[in-house]
Image: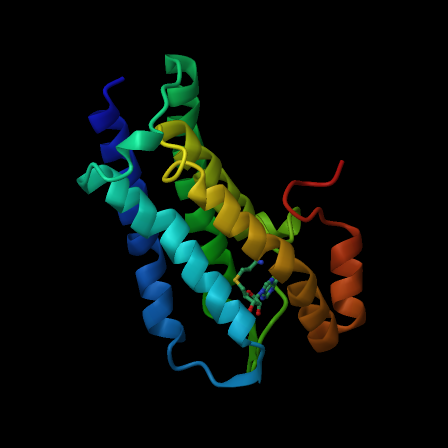
Length: 193
Ligand code: SAH
């Protein structure tokens, strides 16, 4: 496929993520937060993810400054990239819908927070992160550039590694035995078999 076509598909993924997230951002803005774990590290990681998944890809799509690092991939990988983005959009939508008012961009517990264990959360504890893994893998298969294609994997990978442990600890502190029982029957990123 033409690189331009692949770039357009990536652009649609960015658009889809913004459209899916927007109503939740709006509604949850008024949440009363009782445990806020938005540390400086967390803010830095969120900024890195923004650079890795949005800014560098846009630099590659709209300018030629990263062209020195271009590579090419066969069609089958490109198609796999499209599939990754479809899976991303579906799971990103579903996980936002299931978390509802409990969703937040950073680690926090709101007043009246409930433990969601239904829908996609019935089998997986972090389906939104699974969705974002689909995205960053898709990014490397659609954007054929060592910088803009791989920056998502590095930025989100780092954030995932440093965030998922503290997030589970925070949930355990908030929900105790209920969370431990939930944890025992679910997988982190994929269903437990
Ligand atoms: N890690 C989850 C959610 C990401 S959004 C996922 O990948 O799907 C981050 C916020 O979601 C956290 O601040 C936490 O308060 C909330 N959260 C995470 N898991 C939850 C659950 N099972 N039920 C309710 N809230 C949850």
